[in-house]
Length: 94
Image (cartoon, rainbow, N blue to C red; front, side, top):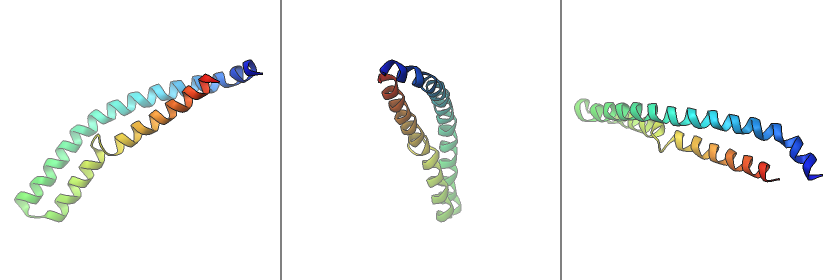
């Protein structure tokens, strides 16, 4: 019975493994690009606060920079990829 279940789950685990590899590549690549963009947006927000005196718009830009920094949305994506990897490993362990 366990062999039949492994045979049935093989295509699912194979597809999930390929999807995870693609998602990991996209996450690493986008995290690199978003880090650069977050730095530029942070500098722009800081410049708006210091030079223009527009603290509201500056804080908005800094908040958006935090969201796209490696500690914001990319961290959530990495957590989701890790969770999917755990599910994939559990399916392989059956």
